Image (cartoon, rainbow over all chains, first blue to last red; front, side, top):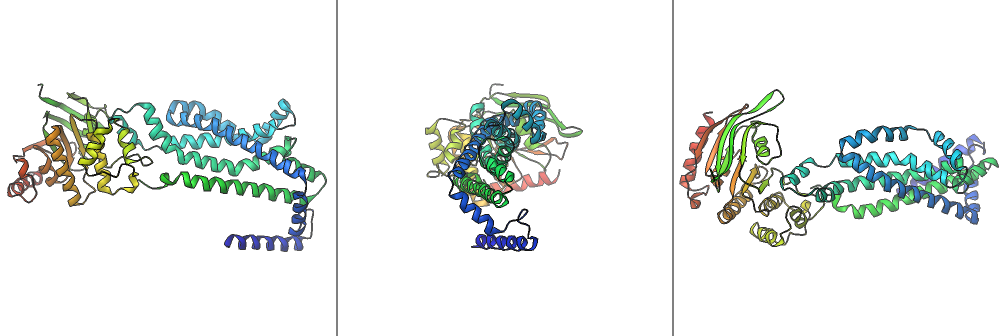
Amino acid sequence: MKILLGILIFLIVWQVFSVVLNVPLILPSPYLTFESLFHLAGQSDTYQAILSTVWKSLLVLLTVIAVGIPVGFFMGINENVYEIFRPAVTVIQAVPVISWLALVIFVWGIGWKGPVVIGFLSLLPISIFTTAAGVRSTDKNLIEMAKVYKVPKVKIVKAIYLGSLVPFIFSTVEVIIGDVWKVIVVAEYLCGSSGIGVLISWARQYVDVPRIYALTIITVALGIASERVAKMAFRKILGKWQIPS
Amino acid sequence: MADTILRVENLKKDFGTLPVIDGWNLELAKEERIAMIGPSGCGKTTFLKIIADLDRNFSGNIERNFERVGFVFQEPRLIPWISVMENLTFVSSDEDKIIFFLKAMRLEGFENYLPSQLSGGMKQRVNLVRALIVDPEILILDEPFASLDMPVKFAIIADINALRNQKRFAIIMITHDTKEAISMADRVLILSKRPSKIVEDVKIDLQEGERDISNTEFIKIESILMKRIFSI
């Protein structure tokens, strides 16, 4: 109920500002935007674009998890590995998207690979550093206990390190899910051949501002929906991790 | 000596410029039980870590004539996201033994509980079961009852004593509580302030049946022990 009230207030403020400004090229009214949104909903191109953005986002999510978690794990478990990898990961994190863009266009041109690679490189450092932080924060008392009882290393990794890593993995995934849409849409806008970002790029060329806003609403909705679904799923799985011991 | 399970000679330990343990000498015979009482910061827990081979940064000589050690930590140190049974199979795969000690420690029926679903006393019992299922030759107890109320504490002590009389493992324990020490030990070592020395070695001359806090002999020994502690 409170959420609906919040949305209502947001729409009213939007409407007021659009009337006061009276420049539809900058801020179209909610009416124009939703009219455009309904128009988009009736076009098959919109669904193809959404599908294209969704599969690219999923691909980025999976590859970031598949690479980031093992690398972060080894960085967390071993100080030397951490110090060796840290500079490279920090550089990847600091490089601006525009630099990746130049490289990606040069290598692959316009297409699906560019957005996926840019998304991957933008989100990989978060996944690595969060995982490493999770491993480094493992309860040293538990490791000491395992040493007293001469528990094999494989068992220690499985029961203690991976166990304490689970909440970090889920929070990493949550953060990535929240960011992946934005990153992919920007990358599509800059070097994609399909997807919501490409539709936004076309709308910009036709100076169709309500359409840009409508496509933005679709992206935001996808982001919020995926984050909610992930949170609901994780809450169930993470039940026993949230109870303090 | 073949009957000695642990011999410590001139043990010294410091943390940087801070000397903590200053030349401890002690012997623990097989099946013997000693308790150590001393002020906070005098190196008691550090000593237990040295015995358990968790800390090798010391000078002096340690002769360990044992392989299997059970360590009852001050805090339960149970892995929070796995069940009681999984916490126990983490250190030993002998399920029959686990079930035997779970029964002995009155934890039957709690095998599938998570640590967070247990009371403080139950967690400490699981901590104890974990130490016992490895079939220890020496049981190390690091103030294991500090956070427990009196009835729970003495119920657990009674269970440990009963099991120890069956399994005959040696015990080395740290405590601040003279009652705990007298209930469980054959000797009580009194430690001085940091840098600590072993200043008294008090024999507890009580039969098993007399190790009851309301027993007259128990109370006499406690008063002697208290006098010695306060005289340091």
